Length: 172
Image (tube, helix red, strand yellow):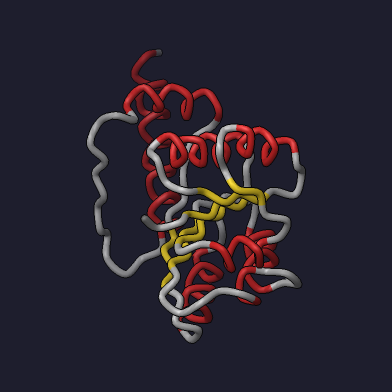
């Protein structure tokens, strides 16, 4: 069974990591603040003290970080993922970052034999908690071509805002 790594255990990251554990996958976690790490370790996850340690011990690495510089630092910085990543590993970024950076990270990782997937998550604590009701249902993955997940997310957000504006004007 593949070993999963998860870096970034905020509101969304911690919940996703917890669901990976519940699904029975071995999990290694890292976060700057240690409280969430200790919480998941108590539930059965392995503890890592750097992104490099996560990469060294896992087959798949997920990140869910606040912004573009954070992802770049975790991947390429001191004690970052690329220090110990290995050929055949898969990197999945759940962060919302600049599309150009997502493409750059993917290209640089590809040179090291690591596949990258830009897979940002949307929402907030309330919507994420609400969505967990559906976790036992089938997951649908849609391929949208050679475009970054962040570009798709931006387009979806613009469409949602336009829809909200339309509904608000119709309600008047």
